[in-house]
Amino acid sequence: MYIICCTVFFILRVCILNSISALFRPLSKKVLDGTKMRSEKSSHLLSIDEHDFTLRPAFAGPAVPVGVDVQVESLDSISEVDMDFTMTLYLRHYWRDERLSFPSSINKSMTFDGRLVKKIWVPDVFFVHSKRSFIHDTTTDNIMLRVYPDGQVLYSLRVTVTAACNMDLSRFPLDSQTCTLELESYAYTDEDLMLYWKSGDESLSTDERISLSQFLIQKFHTTSRLAFYSSTGWYNRLYINFTLRRHIFFFLLQTYFPATLMVMLSWVSFWIDRRAVPARVSLGITTVLTMSTIITGVNASMPRVSYIKAVDIYLWTSFVFVFLSVLEYAAVNYLTTVRDGRDRQLREQNADCSCSLPQIRTMMLDGSYSEAETNSLAGYTRAVAPEDSSHKQEQMVVRLALDHLPPEKANRPPRDFRILQNTHTIDTYSRMIFPGVYILFNLIYWCVYC
Image 1: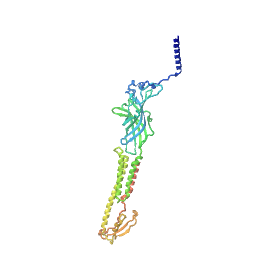
Image 2: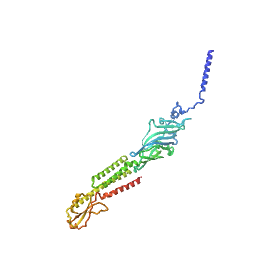
Image 3: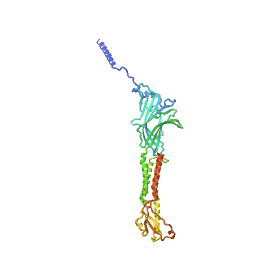
Image 4: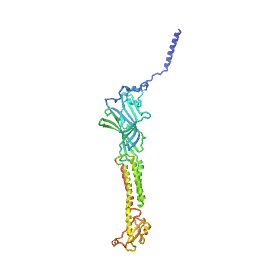
């Protein structure tokens, strides 16, 4: 009897405890989302093992629409020597693959990293005319895959690409360049994959902080067209176009101003005494060598193109002006030497003349002759010539009696010959012609290229 009472008491105790615990249970049980269950793998949830993802979606059906948008993170460099540019961007693809659809009542999408990309089908987009490209992998591969319950897929990756840019440098450095980054499917023609900009021109976005040292980014825009290959067919191709205008201020300081100053420095020789040979020759050689250095420095950083650039026209024209100033002094020095020799011969011929002769000729001497040379004409009649309005210089007139000359020479009418003081007619004209022509050249140059 005692045992029966203990058994009944134990059963009642258990029932009471269960009733009390039931009072503290939640009134409703939370509905679990399949995407949040740890016990089920993502591959099982997406049914990856049940489908052949080596085939594109809707195989043997219409072309798969793949939308693309791009966000340009940075425009790293522009190289005129290699004729290419380097750009870092976020490339995003949008398409639908019903094989990846999954049931979900709360969570709208599932996000994966790059490890799942190798197990499913993704568009095989590549960069046309690219030289180098890579996907960033710090700290992990910069790849994101987002799958929605209805099978919509977002595939994003961060890429740096170096692509060719055909530049026309005929107006360098006063030029503008338009470069293009081209995207295309490598294997699928337009019958299998339709590549398009997802939101038109709004599919391309840029960072406002993008800037380059030598260029001003004027605009970005997108285009698309079909590309044909004779062996494989037609492909959809997308274009990212951007226009760059070169900053001129750097080249003004490094190229144009130094070249102009060298040309102006070469004009200084026109005001130096033509008998100061070392001064004028050294000045001319210095300016020529400096211009050669400027031209060499500019061409060292440029591609070896077969046409003439705008900077070449300016530099070589400036070089010609500097070189002509050296030739100008060569002509002045030669004519001065010839004239001095001719005057020396004339003085030697008249060395034996007497001052008492009736016929007199006049020679005008200037300050370029020393007192000793003037005293060598002792005994000749001297006078001061009247001031000439064109030259306005003080000159001494020496009258030479020509009694011992032959009759045919003595009967000739008297003539005057003048030795100019410290200058030459060529120098006088060069002071006006050289600056005038160079200023005219600059006006034409900047009007044409600006």
